[in-house]
Image (cartoon, rainbow, N blue to C red; front, side):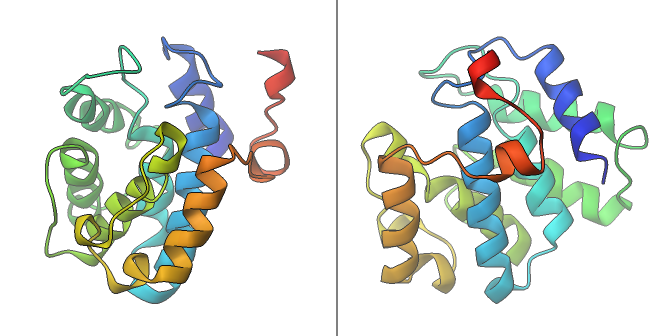
Length: 173
């Protein structure tokens, strides 16, 4: 996966502040949450990683924007074959994960569940502690996982991968 190129494509048209509520730091925490969950859930890691970067990339505001998921899903389709390769079945999972991440509660597929849980575990950034009944997987419902992810979100932890893997200096934005 060409993560720097994907990030560049996402950020070219991203209309919100990079350091905003739904920006780069959120995507990085969702990615770390997803990586940790995937160790247990068996989710397809490449899809979880793509979801983390793309799922909020087409928001128009930091508040209520019910169509941002469908827009992100369609944006992912424009990147497929150009910046990442996924088979039809795998792409359908990414598309559905992006499309439904704000309005669907659960899904039978472990990869989609992992994507949604990774995002929901970062609700502490807006003052909401994730509730186990709103999470899809046993791994995400674990009190230890909720505590770890919620503390990072609540205190605005900037994951090292922002600098180390993505080479983004938020001081420059």
